[in-house]
Amino acid sequence: MKAAYTRYGPPDVIEVNDLDKPVPRDNEILIKVRAASVNPLDWKTMTGGPYIVRLLLGLRKPKIKQLDVDVPGQVEAVGGNVTQFKPGDAVFGTCRGAFAEYACTCGSARIMKPALAVKPDNVTFERAACAPIAGLTALQGLRDKGRIQSGKKVLINGAAGGVGTFAVQIAKCFGTDVTGVCSTRNVDMVRSIGANRVIDYTEEDFTRSGQHYDLLFDAVGNHSLSACRRALNRKGILVMVGAPSDAGLMSILVRLIGAFVLSWFVSQKLVIFLARSNREDLTIVGELMATGKVTPVIDRRFSLSEVPEALRYLEEGHARGKVAITLEHNNGT
Image (cartoon, rainbow, N blue to C red; front, side, top):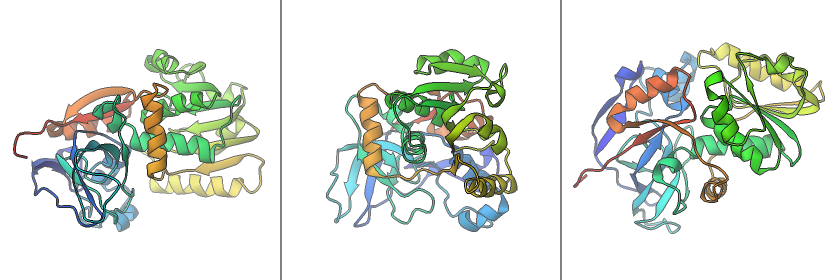
């Protein structure tokens, strides 16, 4: 089978070559991958991130050589202990190594545990590929950490990005008043997916506008904690799910510690959040797509052989919505 694998370095280090087709163990599922999408986690793995992160990823070379966790496809084979799925089922979810013609779930995944749900019939594989990480981050961040409720005022910073486009639409599903923050070229798009108001950050700084929100969902991390607090109500909640692409480990740690300490002394709640993959929430995201309440925004599409170009494009930081990878299976693979 064809698969993309990497060592540490720029996108050019990624190779797409033939690998052995995986064989599922007793508790595993083999998926014929039909599409995938690119996440910041992929190029962070590729570059190795700050050197301290390599204690997890591998010091000299990545222990995880195959990239991506967003996977939709058809069940090809199942292990002897698997009962919830059967060959031929259309599924989507998280599974390491989705930049390949076949991917196998593995319970020992280091970063994102595998989880699968049934793909709705009226949702394409390409759109399903865009949903797992971005959709789960938006849903869990808003619902579980942001305590979102109908009638509340919500601001999405980074509303045009992969997570942000999901967050705008999911926040609207909860019956909230949504303000999206994005660049000039994305204003119309963010408004079209449901934002009540859109702030062009090149024209206005939302932290200095005098407006206050019950929930600030920050998918960018380009403002200080004190600036974000200015935009919150007295008991507002700041949910931080993103950081600038050039942010160093020290700045991320300072932000994390600062949020933790401040939360003890102020009436506002400051939370840094990472999504967890589970079948129940994947099913919710699938239902939102099936009913048309959430539609993944796809900026560009690349083939499997163009994964390096896709990662390079994402790394530039100007992707509108998600970047998708399409796969075409050859006979006999």
